[in-house]
Amino acid sequence: MIVDMQKVAVLSIASQEEELLKQLRELGVLHITQKEKPERRSKDSLSEKIKVAQGVVNTLLNCPKDNHVPDLSPEEIIRKVQELTASVSADTENAQKLKNQLELLSAWGDFDPKIIRELRKSGVIVKLYSCQEEQEPEEPYGVVKQVIARTKGQVYFALCGREDFSLELPEVSLPEKSTKELKLEYEGLLNRAENSRKELNSLRGAVSVLEKYLKELEREYAYASAFDSVTVDGKIVYLEGFVPEPEMGKLIETAKREGWGLWYEKADRSDPAVPTLLDLPGWLKPVKVVFDFIDAMPGYNECDVSLPVMIYFTLFFSIIVGDAGYGLIYLIASIILKLKVKARAAQPAIIFLIILSCGTVVWGLLNGAFFGIAKESLPVFLRGLPCLQGEKSMACVQWFCFAVALTHLAGARIWRAVIAGSLREALGNLGWMFFLTCNFFAIITMIVGDTFPFVEHTSVQSFPVWCYAGGIIGAVLILLFSVNWGNIGDVLYTPFNFINSFVDVLSYIRLFAVGLSGTYIAQCFNDMGSMLYAGQTGWKLIVFGLCGALVIVIGHVLNIVLGMMSVLVHGLRLNTLEFSNHMQINWEGKAYKPFSGSIENN
Image (cartoon, rainbow, N blue to C red; front, top):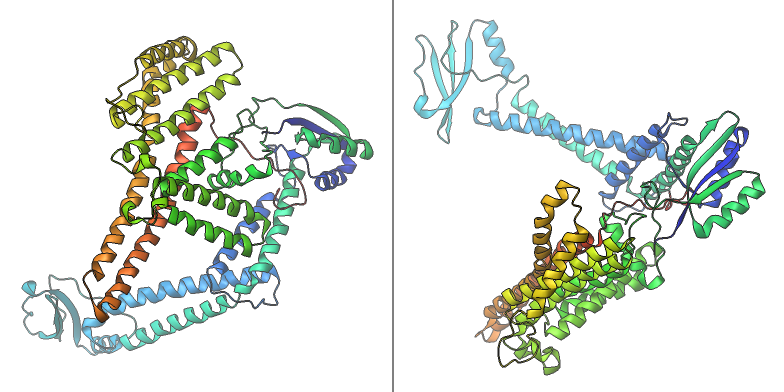
């Protein structure tokens, strides 16, 4: 659930401002409201230091691992890394320019431009030209021409004369240095860049030092932000913010002990400044991985949808990946991670992966999907439910996907109706529930062709007559109670809302389509691998068998990666777009971050 918040203001005398902040930091319950006013402490410089330090850490993380920790201060490490990074960048860039110049001069061979300049001083004029062979000109009178090279339809030549001359061609610019000197300079730049890289790599072990330094900077920044948020009114200072109701007792007790003034009231649900704190039971906490990944949080005035997100994301993951064999791979990998990784921060993600893996195994067993192996080649107990083995298997999966859409979207509307603040809002949401149900049966009739394909019928079941009444009732309720007839924009958009509700249900066919594509990819790689060794004997069977196995393994690895990417796209979308629209959640909440000594909170 979303924890109720109290809006508070803590008052103290100006001379106790530092002590006020110190005590509030130790208490660690106040989410401070940031105020737009002139800075009293240099947050900008701290922010810049954090940005620079984080950039240096990212640079070092890209270096080969080295456990040696240099005996340098964090500031010295940062300065050294910046200098080395700039040196590598400048030397690499200059080396590339020289390389380009040498490539342009390569057709002329090794020569020293100083000789040409000295000849000019002694009265002998030498000029270099290049052009396409068909444009090659005749040399002027009294001028000697020497072709240096012909390559790729281009001719390179030198003209030499006692008097100045010109051609209707651009003259080749002479470099300042000889080709030999340019090559030496190029090699020197490469060597210097390589030495700088080695020195940079030797600082890789300083990451731990810099991470501690970053935490300290973040603490200082949090304190500076809090200090700047303090309002000074003569001899009184006060700080505003929000405190979870269960934590108010701590603040009240501290205020009495320290002699602070304390004002508080229940936070207004419509106030966008109120932060959101989710209080989830232990078994539901893994779903926060999804919220953290998309960096989204329901608003304080919205609903906690952690439970439906966890249930349906698991279901989406299971259908999209869709293979019990893949699920077992995920499960084994997640169990190994659980045993090996002890960091508390990683545990929710690992537990969530275990849940998703178990769901995938269950769905794969029900559907008879095991590494894309044909069902008839599997043991009977792995072939899945009987209704998912026959000619209606695809129709059954399609029906199930649309049923998921109905429960997901209509469930959101029923939830909104239950928590509605008025009868009008409740009836409007019930109208959408009826209309979504009508959409469900309309889509089932058009695409699946059977309202319930799981059992044999003597005739194909068509659109239920009672759904017409349900659709009409739903439309009437929507028009009467969900449309704001005083808002012309709402009125004009109403037909599109009806269309969108149909499209929302229809969009869940993506679960079937993506899952089916994964199955076909697995089957295709299995077939390609088996074709390599089919009909082979003797040593050829061994060689081609290994090649075939390699093709199959690569194919399944690729399929697993594609499945994960599909989940990120489609699984997240159905929760954060289709479901959220019907649940009227905008995901614009800000997380509760109390002012404390904990880096995680600040």
